Length: 592
Image 1 (tube, rainbow, N blue to C red):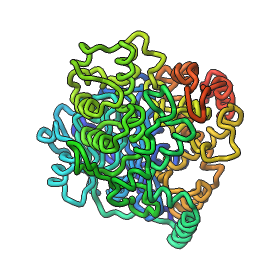
Image 2 (image 1 turned 90 degrees about the vertical axis):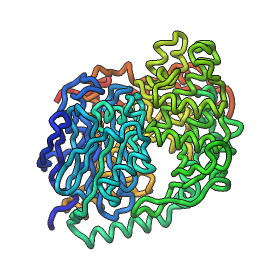
Image 3 (image 1 turned 180 degrees about the vertical axis):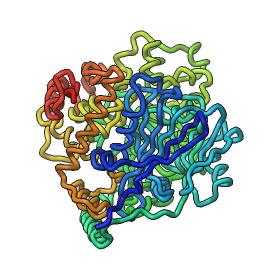
């Protein structure tokens, strides 16, 4: 059986020297780290020392595919960016969906390591022949859609482009990398590209991913599709996308509202998935080889942005730009999401930062003098739309908001209790007071306040036999779910595709040509999770940083299904989680 899934080579690009070389991808790294997030994290850990400035030339940006990219396996449309985060100073794995992952794989390279900093503004073109360097002087200042169009004029219409907008150029600490309608959003990867004077990366090629056993692969793909056909959740995702979660999470009392002051938004149905589908949905959209089609193309109907179309808005964007700001106008949310994509901003952090600023104004910690007379009042749609551009350009109060919640909170005495971040990264769109395990998920996530890589504990909302308000059993579930997420990130499979994790070993065996077991993949995932922990420990993080904002630990939810609840027994959950991982009680992995 011939081996497949990998080309066995990746690119090393030195922007300082405007040079590149091809590197062999060692078999031992493939065996130990599989691909995607695993290999990228290993290379980042090995190639740079601890405590480098995330916005310096010494911080590397690594992009890697997985063994299933370039095939027609369902969900094989992800690739992973890994760097040191400028907003949290942690390791920062970010996944990007869409067509670019498949196109990257067709270059015939498994990944890309970007080092150094260019003395001039550049964009890169990657083809099977290697890397070419092009001036981005005329692209600087352009929004993401404009940038992609300009790059395609030079690189060819068939290429795919990922790029930064003005937010990344201006080093906004939560700026994103954008490819068409998809983003690598969290942790400030856009700022890392901007710090390197790198505006865009274009990829194109026609190299096919080798598949070791074509018949076994087709059989496994059929098994996955049969499983998907029997899954009732797919119909809901196809109709409403992730926005369908809004009504559920609101009913459970976990919908961030008014900067997490409460978990229930009385106008939630006006921004729910069904409302978008009924009133603003143009059509559905699916990535290549995806039978789920969880994306919506929606259009704003009213206001100055009437006629604006985008893919989405997704659940997280709806919540953080909607209920978290007390905004119930879906057209404002669509416009705000669109502006974030065009400027290259993470919608989650953007909505969180604006909500934090609104509460600071409410409490008198920010004044009219600070805001330049801009009214940062709850539900003010025009202010939100104005602030997005101001943040991206670092204009007026936007310059302060561009620092993120954690840094801004340090400037505003008395705001610490409601600064909603973990390790500097703003919280995602679930209030863990309504599902205690989500608090553990936030606390242990490698890059801070995200909802997935620490274990997507929000799934407990859909389990009728689960006690949402206990610490018992949460550590074990978080460990299992974080391993599932890591397996998908290593293989570069989409977690929204409903591919059972138990089928992944069979799929990999067919593609790669070697046997995998569920336990072997879990051990590989554990190795990656522990390596991420070692990276963070090397940066100075410890158990004390595995915590939650005081609001979640000390302020009970005032209403809704979870009324009176606040996260309890976080320390006990951490003790259990560390023990499951084989880490020391202080959260440090044992020495090798």
